[in-house]
Structures are given as structure tokens and as C-alpha cells.
Length: 57
Image (cartoon, rainbow, N blue to C red; front, side, top):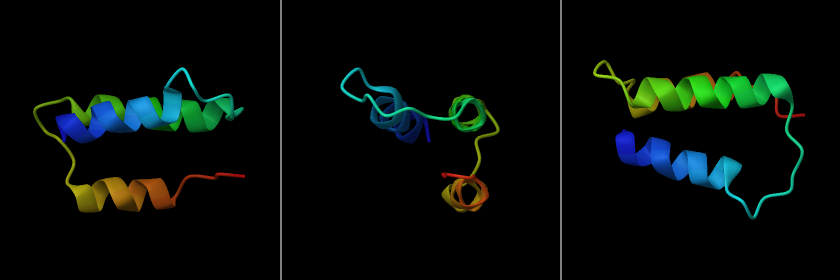
């Protein structure tokens, strides 16, 4: 999950992205990334379920 978190951070917040993101979405993404770096990492199934709840509009 650590590698996923690093990739996810790069895709979402890489310097080449100029897309505006809502503050709430940024908070959700950062929280999920931080959880992926902990000892009690979420499963990929948990990650997908959480991401499905995000409001991307």
C-alpha cells in the first residue's frame, strides 16, 4: 500500500497538474494516503470503497 500511496500522491498532486480540486477532495485524498503509510494499512478493497464515496464534481 505504501507504493500505491506514493503513486496516488504523484498522480493527484504532481507538479504537472493544474486541475483545481475541491478542498474536501484534497482532504479526503490526503487522509487516505496517510492511512496507506500506517501499520494498519487499508486493503485495496477498502481503498476502492472509500474512493467511491468521494464527490468528484
